[in-house]
Amino acid sequence: MIKAAILYICTGKYDVFWKDFFESYERNFLPDTRKEYFVFTDADKLYKEDECDRIHKIYQERLGWPDDTLMRYHLFDTILEQLRLFDYIFFMNANCKCVAKIGEKEFLPIEKDVVVVQHPGAYRKKPRQFTYDRNPKSTAYIKRGHGKYYVCGGINGGKAAAYINLIKELKRNIDIDKENNIIARWHDESHINHYILEHDNWMLLSPSYCYAESWNLPFEAKILVRDKSKYFDVDTMKSGKFIALLKKIKNAIKAVNWRKKCHF
Image (tube, rainbow, N blue to C red):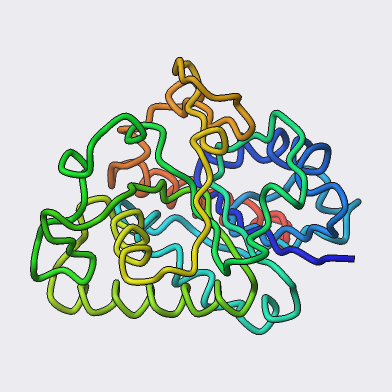
């Protein structure tokens, strides 16, 4: 049986999406594949974690904005030895929900090495309208007149060896930018768009596999990207105040637990 690792990050309030994500992917995604979930989270408890031995929880606190998205490949880099044991590796945004059957033949990159998904906001646009990174000092830089597609950053994957190389390459490029005090325009998404420009080993899927909730697109919704604003205040989540508040709450909980332990 094919083995696939699914990478998933749900820090802060994003764990609200986990239950629906897990159930929908178990039900609809790659039914003839053994799926194991690597969940980077600061949640105390994940749905089904005690019942399913294919859920691997890795403790991870929020990094703050924009590092929560920009540094995701650094997180993946910490578990490369585990990931080498799989045939395929996929990353899915926390707010994804698999709402239709997706078989191996349509999603696995058999003839290619990597799979990417066309961004739903770009499929009608011409390349000159794409929001590539235009800063020539960034490793994500794409010259005007270059690039044919714009892909989303929240859904991608591939054959294990190729995807591990992608992880290493993007991590290296992001580190170079950081050393030069540069943050790419759309963070990790800018870097993966630069990656597909530099490589030809990828298979492109339609926006069906990154269907934005409430949008009216001429595609069948297969992977729905849920509207985060329906679940929490996105701007507050991105602010430093929210992270500081989370730390205060966690410290308070630790203090209470310590007092209980000491019988105070």
